Amino acid sequence: MKKTLLESAAAGVITESVKKIASAEGMTPQELNRLIAAGRAVVPVNRIKKLTQPCAIGEGLSVKVNANLGTSPAKYDNRLELNKLKAAVDFGADTVMDLSIGPGLKKTREIILNNSPIPIGTVPIYEAATRAEKKHGSFLKMTAADLIQVITEQAREGVDFFTLHCGVTRKSLRVMETHPRLMGIVSRGGAIMANWIRTNKTENPLFTEFAQILEIMKTYDVTLSLGDGLRPGALADATDRAQLAELRLLGKLAEQARRSGVQVMIEGPGHVPLNQIAKNVQLQKKYCANAPFYVLGPLVCDSGAGYDHITAAIGAGVAAAAGADYLCFVTPSEHLSLPDLEDIKQGVIASRIAARAGDIARGRSRSWELERRFSQARKDRDWESQLSLSLDPKLFTEYRNRTGKPAGTKDVCSMCDKFCSIKLMDNLEDTA
Image 1 (cartoon, rainbow, N blue to C red):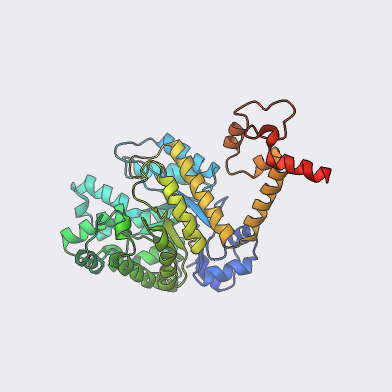
Image 2: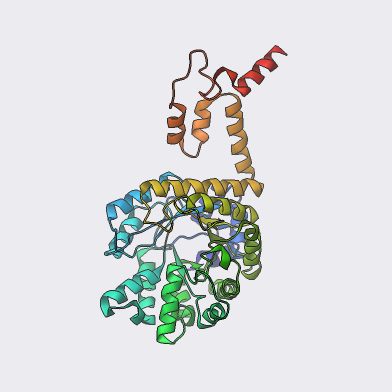
């Protein structure tokens, strides 16, 4: 069998993807290979395809951003999903996950895979559950074979990384039962698996068949993202025993994946108070041998409905500064509805700001240089340079042109006009 990227890195083989990514990250291919071989970075690229915009996630790299797409039974429009994909890519997402559970989800995934220049992730249990609903009348009648079949099919189609909720086990559920939560399980995949386990009175097949699943993923070099099915969905449940019991198990599964030649990252919370975020990152790095950490937010308050892209970006910035490597965006419509195009944009931009803040806090030289260049352009009232360096050039232009600029003050904005502090200080310097 052809070597996986992890095995190639361990053998010192430099692939084309590693060369391309290392150049973009400002490091040597050998440095990136060492991180991959140590399990501290991953490059999610299915071996059956080539991506025009691959990326690496992990230690020593710029913080990456993921955008979620996908249909629901209440709303499914493949043209809209394609437009969401384009918006996510245009506004700077590094990866996309297709979380579809609506009718024709296989076709939706095919469209996204065929049109995405960036890595694509999925949650296979969603398709397995929807198939079981259609075939048997209930997702509770899903079998281990059903799950294995979906994982195999999606790997063959070219999916780059899977979220698998292997840590929701009978043991971890007992921990949650003995230490009750306010919100219980809020992960969709985690809730599906918990209900299946309790109804069938048997162990999670993603856990019992883990070795077989790894062989499938190794065949196609699919990256494993170990899902946090017991992540806290309320501040009151943050950093509780169930969350940490699952995290410890994920660390052990991650080590097994690495030994099998499969790249692996770990997913994290969720809803976490600001003062607990850094500790959550430290615990993940400790329990999971510094595997890349993929966080959803974390949201720093529960009551921000309609503005959860902001509550998440605040937590994401703190998490990134503390060492989180990969941010899953949260949109304004989180908890309320399926996101539209504007929600996708707002979610990506908010997460990119958080990622950039994290890069700056971690002393990433390229990020510091960009900020210095932007500040210099602002000092010089160089609007074209500011435009080119901005996160959203279109919005920059709209605000810049919102009101007419008074005669004689073309090099200032409309807020301070001739009393622009920067221009006044330049005049003072000229006089001196």
